Length: 277
Image (cartoon, rainbow, N blue to C red):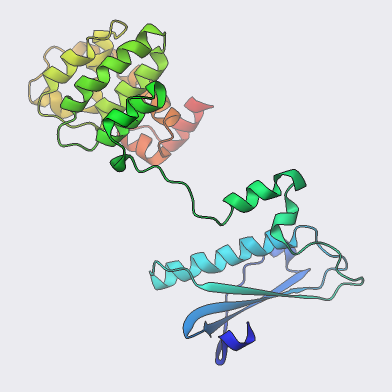
């Protein structure tokens, strides 16, 4: 490593990544330095606790991540810097704990951890999966096709095919799953043919038409303004509060961010948290 560092480029930085409650036991020094001509950091951790810390390698990882986050924030770049950690231990007894992060995991899990942690992450690119392939998997495939086509300029053609799988799920009693799918489609799907979309949805026997119209009007108020649906004033007035709750819960169940849910429903993040707990 020494031959990779340009010592003439070393600059002491002011940042510290140690929690205040640990400052009596640890001192950290951050140096900006070039590694093979590329900017990086030398992170020096001085442990002057009387005993070695069993989770030091994990703690180091957190500090190093903090250095990287600060670098990204201040430089606005998309490349992570090399952070080389160096620990100076001055306890009363020799250091006895591992410095290998993987040793902190249960022995029987280490092989799997090494295969996943710091390895390229798995990503399912739905843009590269054909609808025919996804259709082979009922539960996963139905939702995957919805997600794949949710940003289409017109979701109706795809939804007319997906509704057939929703009918199969309906026959299996999966009403909650179907409600989640419909909420997502009505909230984010786009089409100029709202009436046709509603008629397609009504092919499902378990769909409550009044609730559907109320939900659609709440999520897409422009539908009412265009006059596509008439006479929803009463349904909207009576069902809006209940709709907010149902929409928020459904969106949360799909893993959507609280800020997105808040924007869609008008509920505060605190109100949403109360609803889902």
